[in-house]
Length: 445
Image (cartoon, rainbow, N blue to C red; front, side):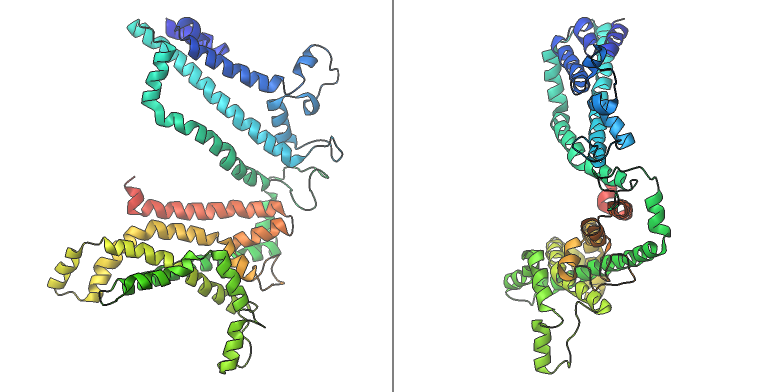
C-alpha cells in the first residue's frame, strides 16, 4: 500500500514519501528543505557540532544551546547570570523563547501537513493508479486554495507582530517585573498569581483599582451614550425638511470631529485653565462668576469637564452615521403610520429609533470599547488629575488605560500594569463579544 509506505517515509524525512513513492519530486524537495531549515536553526545557532566533536567539555544550554533549546531554556529559567557584557537579560530571554515556540509551532504545522499530504497522495494513487506531478499539484492547489496562500504570509506576520506582544504582556503579569527588578541588572522570576493577588487584596491597590474601574465604566457609558443621543438629535434637526442650507450646517457640525483630537484637547486644556484660562476671564468680566471655576483641578468638576469635552468631540461621528441611516429609511413606513393615525413622536418611537438603533448598535459597541481605552481624551486634557493622595499613583479622572500608562512610564511597575491590561482585555473583550453576538448584524454571519 503506497499510502502506508509514503506516510512511514515522511515521518522521518519530510517529503520523502512524496519524492520516492508518489513521484512528486519538487514537492518532496521543498518539504525536505524545510526540515533542513528547522534543523539548521538549532544546529548552526549553537555549538552542537563542536560538542559532539568533543571540543566542548563543559557543555551548558545557556552558552552552547541552539535556537530552540536556548529559547526554551531562557523562557523557563529567565537567566542565571546578571550584569556585565555576558549577563542574561530576562525580558529578552522571554521574547526569544516566545519566538522559538512560535517558530516551532509553524514547523510542526508543516510537519503535520507533510504527513497528511503523504498519506492522501499515496491513497489517491492506490485508488486511481494515477500519478500527479508536482507542477500539476501546485497548479491545482493554486486554483483551489489561492485565498489561503495569500493569507498564510499575512497570518505569519500577524503572529509575530500582533500576537507575540499580546502574549508577552500577559506573561509579564506573572513576573516580578518592576523597578526593583529591572534587567539586565537583576533577573526576573516567575511569581504565579502573586501580582493578581496583590492588586485585588492589598487595600491601597484594591481600593484604587475599584475607584478607577468605577469611573472608567461611568466614563464609558455616559461619554458614549451622551454622544450617541446628541448625534441622533443633531441628525434629526439637520435632516428636518424645514431646515435650509443643510450642507452648511453639516459642515459646521462635523468640524469638531474633523480637527485632530489631540489639538482640540490641548486647546480645551488652555481654554479651561483654572487661573488664567480665557473662559474664566470672560465669565469674570461679564460678572457671571465671582471666582475662577476649577474646571480641571476639582475632582467632580474635572470629571464633568472631560465628559462635556468628549461630548463635543464625539457627537459629530454619530451624527454623520445617523444621517446616512436616515437617508436610507423606507418612507412608506411613515406614510402608513400617519394613515393609521400615528403622530410624529410615535413614528419616531416605533419606526425611526428602532431602525436606527439596530443599524448603528455595532458602531455603538465599538465606540464603547474605544472610550473604555480612550487614553488621549483623558491624558491630554487633565493628565488624570487632579492628584488624589488616597489613590496609588492615580488621579481622580484617571481611567484604567491612563493609570496603566503612569504605572509603566512613571513608576516602572510593569507587572501590576500587565495585570490590569489582562483584566482590561477580559472586561472589554467579554462585554464586546457578548453584545456583538446579540446584534442582528453578527447573528447573520
